[in-house]
Image (cartoon, rainbow, N blue to C red; front, side, top):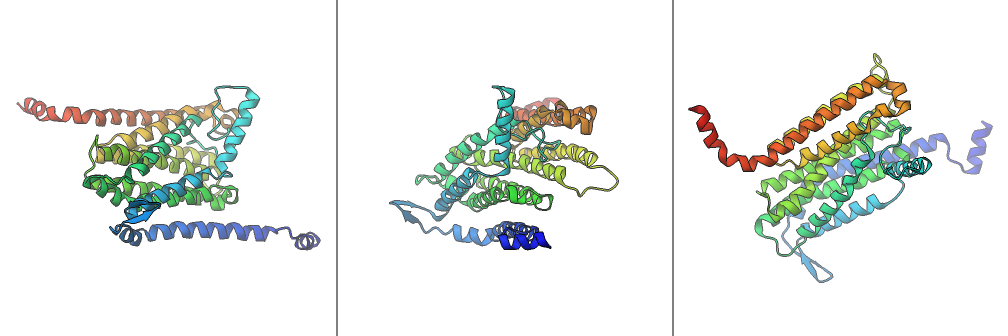
Length: 360
């Protein structure tokens, strides 16, 4: 009682107050994400209005201005420091300085982090982010052009609501992936936002496809390709984030340990990522999504949890090697699919003649 009274007199927050603030933050972020998703239909109708708008002497369609604003919000949100991955990067830099290793990459998940799971990729996997943001900068500039042809304009306009939604969800993820929400009771929010963002980016890519954007048109290279890159990586990031939540969670089947639950989740995650990668790329006949999934799976296999002494002691060397080999198997399968899809346009014209010879 004395300590509680002292806390009240000093103005220090009590555990109940802190718990309430964290729950309130979680409720606000969750409501914002659900509201953004619910409102995308009405927003789409407003966005499709053809009335041009002028700003600083530049006249563009409403959806063009909104796309520029959405990307700006995305970039600013990502640039604000203090996220959990920023803390990890700082720790990685300290570890690299201690080891005096010039080859160390100051990204990824530190070996003793509570967020390290059996689906954690090697640090070099995150080098894909500059590529994605460079590509999406091109996307934003291209869609804002005043000289778009009808097909390109229709493609960008139809993708705009889902692109805006994905940028909104990315900004909310930047809010949720922070110290206030790292407890198991709130850590699921960041993973859920990434899953929702993956679906939203998939819808944006599908909208580009519906507009008959074909390779190697400018609309494909400047429009569909950047979105497909981001779609693939966010899907992989969602899988990683969900497994990180499992690593810190205390909610798992009573008949198995947390280590066993993590191991099973890793095997399922590899297969699920590969299945989604194969389905998306095969249905669109575009290897981009599968290529990014292959990149992520190669990084997961390369991370090699079995090389980290504290992880080996917990899980055992053989199970960790089996998990890494499983990720490598699916990575190679995705790479093979990419080669097939890349070669398909060249091979397709000859298939009828080949089949005719086969049927004789």
